Every structure is written in structure tokens, then in C-alpha cells.
Image: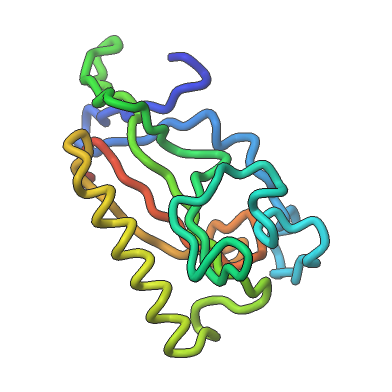
Length: 177
């Protein structure tokens, strides 16, 4: 396996697909101590100004880049990677069926550093869902993808590695069990 590429491997016993994603190893971890959630400062937060911290240009910005409230950007540490005009191929590695880890891994970032979904106004929450829908519709047109899921992990016990509230949209070339 190329250590820069993700892949799905089929568990021979359960038939479940397992994602192996080496690029995720280097992602930041603001919650090194797993005991209690700490409020990370805004200073140095990669999501307070995503374009200045190395993220790609946004796919979606609401309402505009200067006055943004929501941005959708490519994950800097993606579990799967989109390859233009290349669909995932299935092959064997030893006894294991393997599928290339081709897909999209997006981050939906809301502006407020301290406001997770439960604290958004109804208007803000509706806008987040509209952005989810807009990105979902774009991804669902990709014939190489079979499954899209959207989630919000909050805090270290929820799997978040950054304090700033954000959501993830991942599209896969397989359908999980």
C-alpha cells in the first residue's frame, strides 16, 4: 500500500469494509488529554480563517468570502481523496478484496468559534442544513461514488481533533454495511 493513499479492505469474516487512511495520522489534536474538554483559544485556530491556514479555496461560502458565516473546504487530512475522472478500482491484496480510497472529504465550518450546533439559532441551523444539501447534491452527481454521509463530532470523546465547531461530509466508492 502506498502510504499516501487510502484504501478500503474487506474483512474476510464479517464482510465489512474497513478504511485504512494513513494521511489521517498527522492531523492536529487539541485534546491531547482525553479526560476533559478544554476550550481551545481562537488564536491559532485553523478554522477561524481557513484560507490563511493552508486549507484550499472553499467549495461553498455563505453569504460571501468577506463576511462568511459558513464555509465548505476540503479536509487537510482526508480519509479519502478525490481524483479527477478516476473511479475506485477493486483488486486483491493477498486474500483481501481492496478498493481504492477514492472519494471526497469536506469540512463544513461555521464562523463562531464557541457555538456548536446545539447553540445555533434556528436561522443558522437551517443555513447549515441548506449547505449540507447543496454539497450533497453536487457529490451525488459523481458516478464514481455510492455513499455520502454527514456528521458532526464535538469534543474529544466524539472524535473531534479541533475545538472549533465543524461538520464533515464524506463520500465513498462503496456502501458500508
